[in-house]
Length: 75
Image 1 (tube, rainbow, N blue to C red):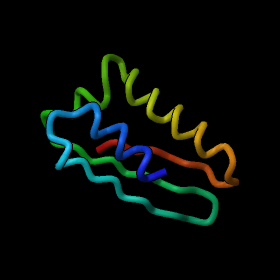
Image 2: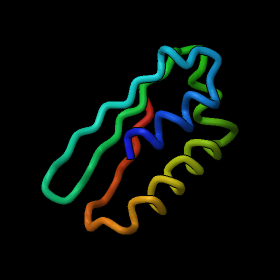
Image 3: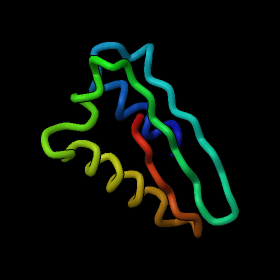
Image 4: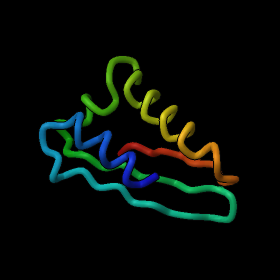
């Protein structure tokens, strides 16, 4: 999942070298924390959060095989 979020984010931003995805695993959840450059934050979130919602939807679909819930947190 971490690689998927990283690939999507790097394709959206102007500074792909500043994209960092941190994965934290608990008992039944996986939290992916996406950090981008401040000037690229709008590109990752999109108008009314549409792109962020789309990223979360793609990750949720990819994680449907596993029993763990995946949360994407954009910072």
